[in-house]
Image (tube, rainbow, N blue to C red; front, top):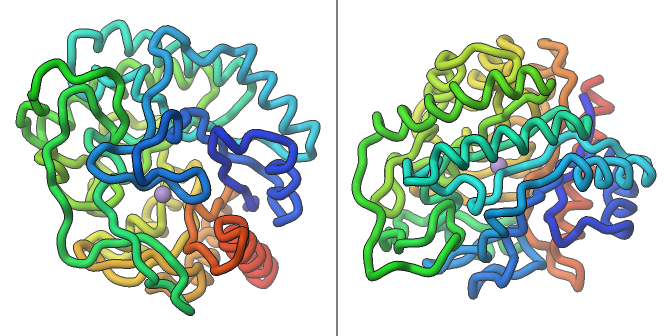
Length: 356
Ligand SMILES: [Mn+2]
């Protein structure tokens, strides 16, 4: 089991690599899509991406697929700083909006995604995390909900369900709207059909490339957000995803916080069940209080999840992947994000030692 650290695109520099190492990380997970590109109005670079109805930043260049050369250069730079590049987290909506929306460019974009996964394999990066979601991470509020009044995100009973405007998906804008339209309604079964198309095309390529695709659940885990269905919003739904295409390359980006927020099941039982299947590619190791629609993200050691029990379950199954903090509350000081992350990392490093 390895301690990793997640970095956003705008943090890919030597100072952040050093910070990760200083926190005890041996591995990095990199968000290569820039969520903060020409950012949405509430999406600041000093916190996890949030943003209101206008979403996060703008999607990238649809014609510029991530190349093996740039990914290799990133991996080499990361290695030169003493870390290993374990995973790329998330596609850019520019590269797969019509895969999610079943739009006219779907076929072409599936080919593009295959190219990206082949390039990730050629760059010797073993894991690619993704989140098959139309609305994406949306609708959470901010409040001083964590210990000592630390600012964090969560839900308090309700969400702004304003429909997704045309030209936006995965909470990012991929083009200007054409008219006032919104995404046409569709069913949960249709969403599963789209996932099946995606896995059917991508899993064979990922197998050949030696890459594990790893699915993140829907955050927040509600059945419907902004009039669009969600895919994995109960723990059992992960099993359906795995059973669609059994393969080492069809794996999970297991977000403890999101799973704990789900109304059914138990997060400890869920991790036991999926670890037993060797389905965990990596883990978002964070804690929460409550379940949808009433939950708060909190510090790693104050939530509903027994994090030591999670580690013992992972040890039992000889899990040898990576844990990253995902997000943490902001601490009251000039370096709020950094302090929150450093606190989580120090706690995790010690917890790994005592459960060894
Ligand atoms: Mn997560």
